[in-house]
Image (cartoon, rainbow, N blue to C red; front, side, top):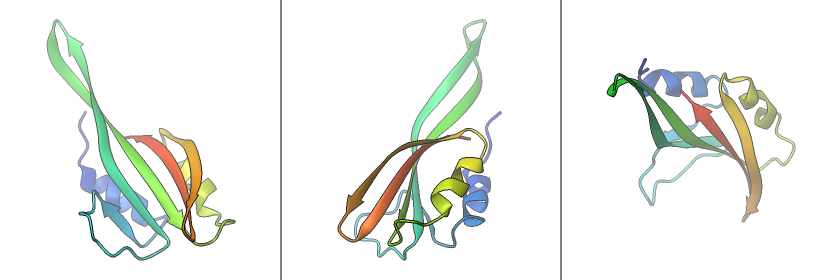
Length: 100
């Protein structure tokens, strides 16, 4: 069953007030923030006909605080898993894969 992306955005706003979906280059981000984008759509077939779709999103949580607890809280979202972390400038980036 395809769920609307806006409902995912509402869920992410429960964890962080600044949520951006595929922001255009040059967008001024407020930190901490979550940036997410559609990464892949997996199609399930039945009798060679598309039956269901699963959307995979790539999500990055960015913060200036290296000990921010949201990096763990985000893992409570169903079908969310941690991928990696990396610093860039004065920001700490935590990346996740999320199926919704």
